[in-house]
Length: 393
Picture 1 (cartoon, rainbow, N blue to C red):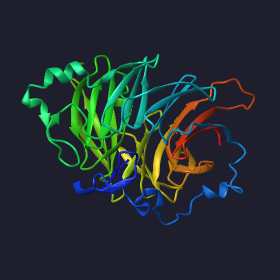
Picture 2: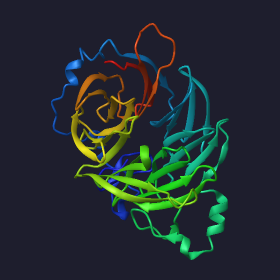
Picture 3: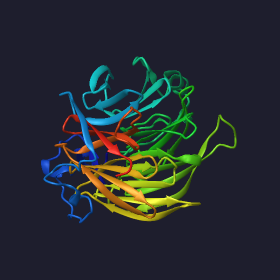
Picture 4: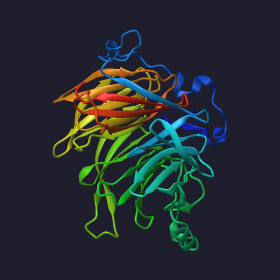
């Protein structure tokens, strides 16, 4: 993730100056966003803590620890949990135990998403790798055949990237792939990158349909919502809404800018949309979460203040709950009731920044009653924690 005009080094999200002369240098400890402080914001979250213990109606189900790297990405598929780290490994867990794993040849695993029998992983080296559900390598995006066909045509080359690197093929990312999202029809995959672009892929044949420069700085997040809407968030401090137009048929797609939600000094670090597609949340490096509610257009709803360091990840549970993970090592659980959000509890236990979140409904038979969610949180403390969260908090 990129903060403002700071760049991340190859081992993660620790920034370095944006000048090309310093691109390979290591930052000092004071330069790390985890060491930056922001004014403490009074919030309904923190009174819910009693001597550092989470409220009793939430529960820590377990912790998954493997001493091989910081956890940067999570995805769930049925009984399986996939975790990606800076060790280049993708670990697969089942019933809180390691089930199997597979390894890429290079590139910290920054994003994981699952579509049917395919697993897509986005990497720090700018590549999107494709795996089968048997965890075997199936290729990359773009497909090698498309790369070879395009090499000799000068019109396929563009200048991209933060440092205006030499011309590259327009359908290849030239910097870290920071986020992946599936379109609402399940046929399209969106990827965004620190090269300032969003790319649109057709899953059936791995073809890149479109590449758009969507921001003036690194793109940290992309989320596809209903009705062809796509939301992007960037280190330039903006969040934008794009609309997919595909009247020309399945072989063509075009995205146009529909709305700019936010323009601020602080980087937009995370984006999430509720299940109905009616509420959009954007987390920022200043520790707050802004949200918008949709009728015909998205209108600003307010701000959630529950952290005193950068918000690094967001995940929604159904239509009325959202979780925010932060560099302060905490996870705030918010419940929406009409026009208002309340922080109903704080999940504590990580000893490092919470970098990624995933939520799924708990379908296991239980005597607890009501609807429950299972939340997974990955941290730079090298652990994944599994939480049980009731819907009616």
